[in-house]
Image 1 (cartoon, rainbow, N blue to C red):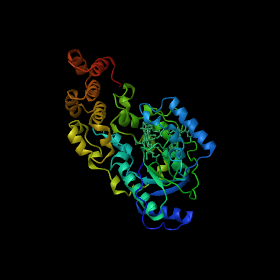
Image 2: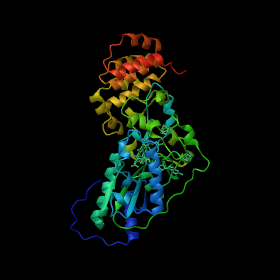
Image 3: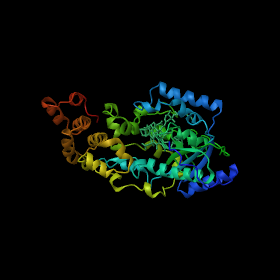
Image 4: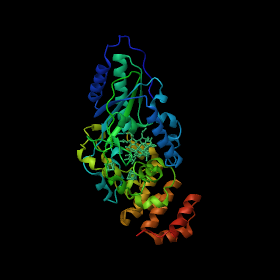
Length: 395
Ligand code: B12
Ligand code: SF4
Ligand code: SF4
């Protein structure tokens, strides 16, 4: 949450709430946001109750996995006005990151890694934050209204805020779907201390469709509109720190950072358009990179290569863990085995453990032979050797 600079010397420009709303919307579009809309920051008692019940149900079932930060400050997540009691209006902004083609094509080239669309360009947090700050600065300098800027890390439920502001609705895959941009919107918010005329909330247009639910490779949806994050590839490859449970390793396929399957399955994407945002143009090194080549990255080369992208956030070891699982799923032993060999002696036990699994997938006999003679010092990796021998490879 960003603080405000000193109060400007110029007097505030007089504006009616409607004029202020129009000026903010025009400025947001000028700054490059694709959509801007307004919602009241104060919830009705019924809305607050429903949000609380749903949030509590999610947490009670442990769907958040290791993301303990979702539990912290749950009350603020439910109600933006508890986050900042002066808040009267949520200015909800959206950036279109629509891809040029269906991202699921990348899943077919198994010797290459699939990085989800949202992470292929510049880190959206940086793009969003810098623009929101510029928008906040404009409102403060011109109109002197107090405000707070949020993006992603704030305890605020951005999809609900965006639905209330009318950008779209929370679809059965739990993400916001827009009639104009399909599944491909990043969301951000600014809270304002003044009440502005709100937009109409959007209603649900999922109907009988269940394309997203049926597309999930790990059955992460226990019911429509509910996600068990512990089963989601996005969570497993990005948020989860340790070894990925064996149950999910084959389903990862070649996904090395995030997953787009449920988003890409949505029929509303027929209205989606390619992003016009230069910062989101996919970087060459994130478009189907060769797995064997990624396996050579050390900490320094990882940091340099992924500087300014969301991939850098998870660190080299977790990324190489994902690469190792993908090598095991590559069905391309000629190129994968030398890379796996290299990762078997990696300094990180997390990476070595994943490499053991990869070896057991591509060369089970060799894995069994090596399991008998390994001098592996780490207990978890030794367990991987034993498990690799015992678990038959899925056919
Ligand atoms: C934690 C988190 C994750 C977690 C959990 C995802 C989740 N669905 O909660 C993980 C790591 C899995 C994740 C993955 C992804 N994420 Co994420 N994530 C977040 C984050 C930081 C918080 C979300 C949150 O509060 N979850 C907690 C639960 C309780 O919320 P929920 O799913 O909305 O749960 C509600 C529903 O279950 C609903 N509900 C329950 N029953 C019913 C019944 C009915 C009828 C209805 C209507 C609703 C309903 O009530 C619950 C509470 O409101 C937000 C940013 C933010 N601050 O909001 C980004 C955010 C949601 N993520 C985003 C993105 C882009 C992704 C990925 C697409 C990235 C990728 N390609 O890999 C995937 C999509 C996976 C998916 N299907 O959701 C975007 C989504 C933009 C959009 N258009 O919606 C956000 C908003 C970030 C941003 N600033 O743009 N993410
Ligand atoms: S992002 Fe992938 S793994 Fe996660 S819910 Fe969607 S389809 Fe399933
Ligand atoms: S795929 Fe179908 S069910 Fe899922 S969000 Fe889109 S319209 Fe709704």
